[in-house]
Amino acid sequence: MALYECVACLHQKTLRIRPLHCNECGRTDTYSLISQTEDKRLGSICALDIVLNEPTRAGTGDQELDSVLLGGFVSPSTSTVFGRGGTGKSRSCIRWATNIGPTLLVSLEMPLELAVHSAKSARANLSQLYVTESETDWEREAAAIHARCVVFDSFHYSQKQKVIKGTKTPLACYELSTWAKAHDGIVFMVAHSNKRNEVSGTTAVEHWPDYLFKFAKHGSNEAKVTIPKARYCPTGSCVIAI
Image (cartoon, rainbow, N blue to C red; front, top):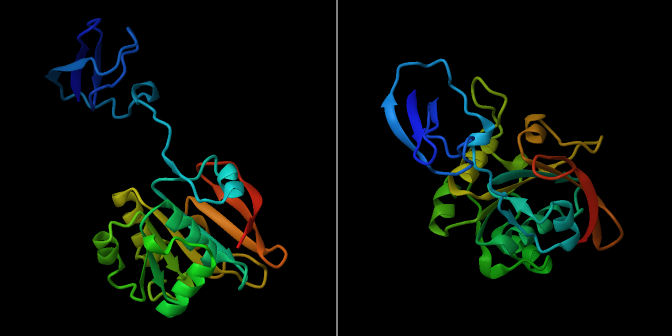
């Protein structure tokens, strides 16, 4: 613990870290360190001492979805995208990601050429797309291209489905989440659905991400995207072209 004093109004505070906002005079960044103390009774921080900035959001290029997301995906963030086969999950994720910035596609289902062909037909920005079939060294590849987004397609073809000891989190989810936080990145993990049209497999894949997207066919060239879980926007749904 340390004692801080506002150089503007001389108000003093004892906190673990330097306060950013003075409750007495209303000024910011005015506190200076006076002395250290061994008093450890106050280990929390008052919410008023934290300067809040609006989260950075990255648009997907799909106006209907961006409207539901309040402008786009928060960075960093993780998403699980699931649904029946042929509903446009992978295509949409690649299009969203390449609209945001350099994207690494970890293609575990499709060979590289077919993955690129699918991305092209989905109107993805191929100049921002890099593809690998290896999930072993994807983090090194992401670093090499300075990736803004990672599309992991798909969880059910991964060799990293086993949960980490002492947790209920699969290794693949842990690695993707750690990468997103460390690089201020955006992650999309594609997953399959079961006969009940829920996320297939462990429930951790559903509870792990910041966003959960459910895809369903809507006509011949559209998909209905439902967001049953979201940390940074209201839940809702929209229809997009796939």
